[in-house]
Image 1 (tube, rainbow, N blue to C red):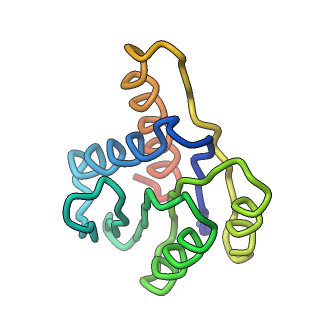
Image 2 (cartoon, rainbow, N blue to C red):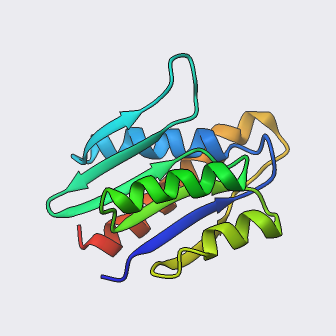
Length: 140
């Protein structure tokens, strides 16, 4: 298995954090075992989840390249085979993620919809897509 980073890419306030939070909840329902590091009263977090011998890191931190780097480095140090992060569609953010040259990098453009009633649907679609790629990658 080639280690992989999936970067959910979109501008501010487009639902990246909501989609990754939903992904985390769905992974727990699919019997991944996880530990979540989340500051009190914050929707932002990172988590490490295990499936058999495979380790996956996910994070919503994507507002600054510095936070992206620091969080991905923590997950690399914890032995993650795959990682999911948020990122803005900026050159600096993308270069930061691409600097993890031992990993295959896959940018996933966030599904968006202007109609607020459809935001949850878009987030569920993105969370399901990411879960499918992760399960395929680890052979689940």
